[in-house]
Image (cartoon, rainbow, N blue to C red; front, side, top):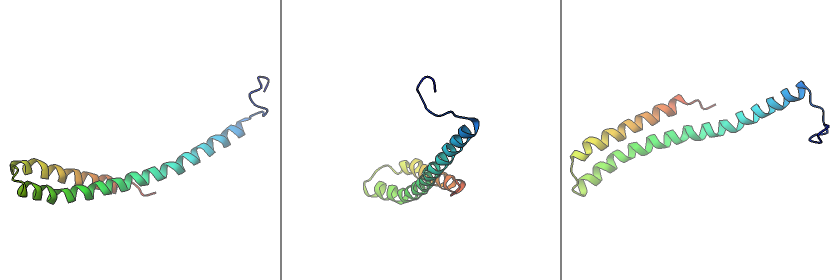
Length: 93
């Protein structure tokens, strides 16, 4: 107060209340980002599942080497399963 920074005398109860308000706001805003991350994982899982037949179709119609499918398709499957497992493990709350 003597330095002119504030005109209020802070005690421990005020600081605790200020900290609790900060935590409540952080928890509230964090829940939205967790929800977004959860749905992003589901989106990725669906996208990788869709890419499996699309990669097969493009490989066959464009005459690309079919050995490429031995690498690409299992990778898409692993990414789809992994994204879905992360989606399931994240809480919606």
